[in-house]
Image (cartoon, rainbow, N blue to C red; front, side, top):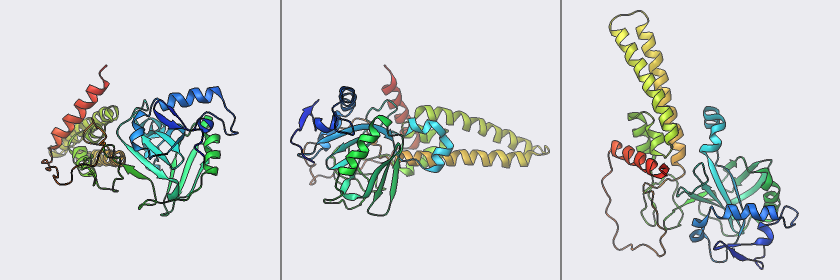
Length: 321
């Protein structure tokens, strides 16, 4: 795809002939207005762009959702998994965001060269990777789906593939690829929240997993449910000890429900962890390679209560006007 009409908009390199046109390549003022509004949401993308790489379209959508997640959360999953998608002439940036589409220092890339096919089906973006995996991104706006469908049909799935041959998360500090299930950047040592701490905090504290992953509203709701179930378990235990009829059955019943509630918290939180959430909320992109001669000292792992307190305090500061 030619970059002959490339120009900067809000400091970002775009192809206006593509970005501000519809699926028939006809310029539309309302599309330009909508795309300019979307570009204002992604100033952070500039350090991630390669030399000569050009943005073709920006749209919203939803990160991949498992069947269990969709069944357990219903329509609210749209708000929990909100994302932005930046289509360039080399790849697609998948950016998990907050509910207002603001950046949360999490970003992944889908190289066209890593895809066996990538198509729009209705309001779904379906990517089949060369490693055999398949991902579906939901709720692509109808106003952009036809245009993106045409864009992808014209995009050659060739070039230099990545080592994973699939969607790969990038470090928000050094912009280099991260390693799957490794929660420390191999290039700059930036640390991310991990599954081990998520499981520990979810088990110890009511709603802890949601607070840890930056979802305080879910955390409050889950905490209330867990506290209520815990009180029922305690009451059933007291009844069982005193020999009240049905006490043991009630204890087993409420205990199973509480355990299931904890398990679902761990399950949901682990899916959020897969988006690689940095432990540090303030990330400055490196402009040069980090000094590898002086490796940073590894700090002792904080206690669960310290982590939970820090996550909660950061959420309060963020949401305070």
